[in-house]
Image (cartoon, rainbow, N blue to C red; front, side, top):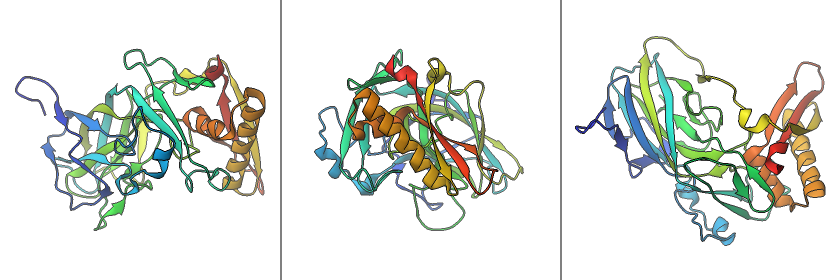
Length: 316
């Protein structure tokens, strides 16, 4: 959809909603192949500012978590089709935040005290952003929440991911990638939000480098091609921004993948505390914005191996 002046149509951030619901009124109808720009809010709906303090964590508006911009009705999209979403560009805001929110995150039972890190970064160069005095984190913008409406009636929480997408938090769905979503309702009813400037695989503390930004993308329809779950294609390497200096890697081994993930992450945090003189809460948040949880082995029963990768480049 192009405006009269030839510019890409912008879907403004006030056109947002807080739950997946196929009864939501579309904010625009577009033809397949349309390129749109979405104003996306951060996951706390703008609650945090450059002047926020750790006390702001307790005051977060939990009834406003993860607003998404939309929905967009794509003409001709029907159940059984695929909505193709090509990510064209991100226009970051330059401000972001990361928080430890009590009761949330992989090690919520161990980290019960609120913590907050505020970020400023260069929107032109996207140079690595300073994590206080401890590290500099390479940036890779992406949208954490991206999806279409489910067929089931009623309002569904925006927090858990679903077959139709939603809060996927996959950092590799970034510029140049195409995401394919199964369509369950007429028009697909596409929405996007929860933009991040950086995140590790796993988002282990529950938040990434949360940052409002605009996203430009192209929506298209692939007719009558059933898709069981979302998939995406990427044009090239996905970890080049982190690989250059290698990694420190910690493992968790046992019969339960969740326990293994917790063990591996705990090992990384302990190492950061001991070798980098970081407070544990800061180490936990740093792991969330740049460290990667990976399943290294899942076939040699009864025990599986989960690994946590800490990129050494953040300390250079």
